[in-house]
Length: 233
View 1 (cartoon, helix red, strand yellow):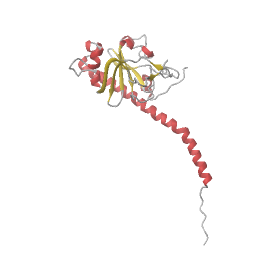
View 2 (cartoon, helix red, strand yellow):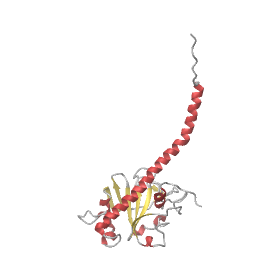
View 3 (cartoon, rainbow, N blue to C red):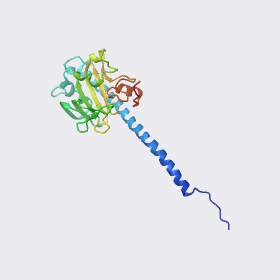
View 4 (cartoon, rainbow, N blue to C red):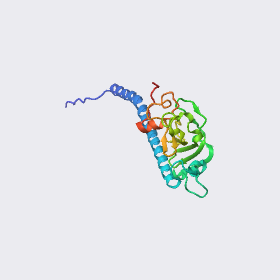
């Protein structure tokens, strides 16, 4: 009986194929993982904006128009409410952990970095953490223009910055890394008569570029639905 020949790959051919697959994987998987991570951070930025906007909208029912009246202008009352009252920002975001000392920040252990790699040493304020791990840090109007968040919207010469009542720093994934402005940390501004505005312009701005600080990337990320740092033109 004549045996039938069966075509098959040799061991050498299989090894070469596996090597090629391995090289392609090593080139593509890191990019895919980075894109997935970036998409999660973008979703976090969008969620932070929505959470802030909805909280302020609900507060307007009890506090009145944004910026008008004692409840808006007293930072302690705005943050934690009056004694025995449930009317406060922290109540509206259902915070599970609150620090009302005015000297706390979102990452006291690891710290936070600017996009250019330098350390941030001035982010103290009122801090609250929600059930999903998102961290909200609020500082009064004296810090409205710090770290370049006045670049774009609101700008240093328009009514938005003039009417700024305070700024929110939000770490969208809490203690998880990278703890970098423009990636998982974003600024939002509370503006009198308006409400919440994302810091920065929705195009390339002085801070949201390679080598920039990353402090005014919120508006750009929200509009473009992606994290994209282009070189300065």
